[in-house]
Amino acid sequence: MNQPNKGPVDPKVALGWLHTARFLTTAPQLEHLPALDQPEIAFVGRSNAGKSTCINTLTQQHRLAFASKTPGRTQSINLFALGKQSLTDAVLADLPGYGYAAVPKQAKLRWQRVMANYLMTRANLRAVVLLCDPRHGLTELDDILLDVIRPRVEKGLHFLVLLTKADKLNRSEAAQALSIARLQTGGGQVQLFSALKRQGIEEAACTLWDWTHETSTAAEPSAPPADPIPS
Ligand SMILES: Nc1nc2c(ncn2[C@@H]2O[C@H](COP(=O)(O)OP(=O)(O)OP(=O)(O)O)[C@@H](O)[C@H]2O)c(=O)[nH]1
Ligand SMILES: [Mg+2]
Image (cartoon, rainbow, N blue to C red; front, side, top):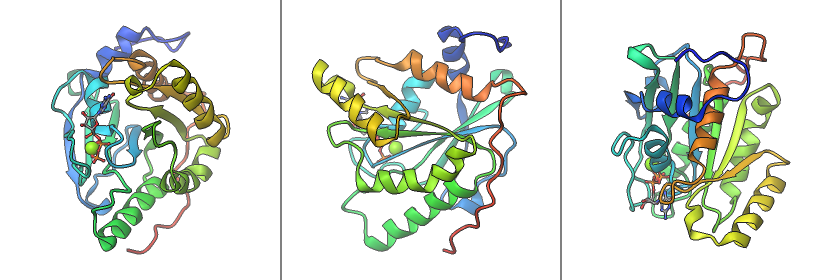
């Protein structure tokens, strides 16, 4: 997949690259995650927002990530390797969702600490994709997440909000959801996405490709100095 770093990437190239995704590892705790050199893209968001479905849609694989009607399906950090012929050039991370009411308080707090630590300290983290069901909008927990990553975004961490399940919105609701999310993220990159109607897939695929195939002159987000929160 040697695409020169000039001009926008052909969506077919980006989708072909994403289709190479394969399971790498799963880790219930941060310390179980392998240290990797390849750029990593984390999919985060409230429980049931559609993170796992989004990964399956972008990689054009039905059962790569576990998706389910039952919120809280993803319980560990799952990593998927990308790149042709087993030459990994990027990694996708599917994270458990937050905000699921039925989870006991202690487990919620534990997971919030694990995720905050992951987002603050994961050295190879290149980008964060925040998935948000626009019928609920960005919630308080999403705002906390935005606060956690803000210092790294200022240092070059890429960030995209995907408004999922866009098939459930009519045209004017979609336009309104887009402008609200843009306001809430301070003019950040936001787009609509629907796994069901296959909307926004090429756009998102090209963004992911661009993030991980930057020219060497592009600013590389450096590992942050942040100390982990004690668990
Ligand atoms: N209508 C519609 N439903 C979707 C879409 N994407 C996901 N869903 C549904 O939303 C539910 C949750 O999807 P998941 O992908 O498991 O959500 P998740 O964010 O990974 O959830 P957790 O792992 O619990 O955090 C499933 O029933 C999906 O079929 C979409 O684009 N449109
Ligand atoms: Mg999931």
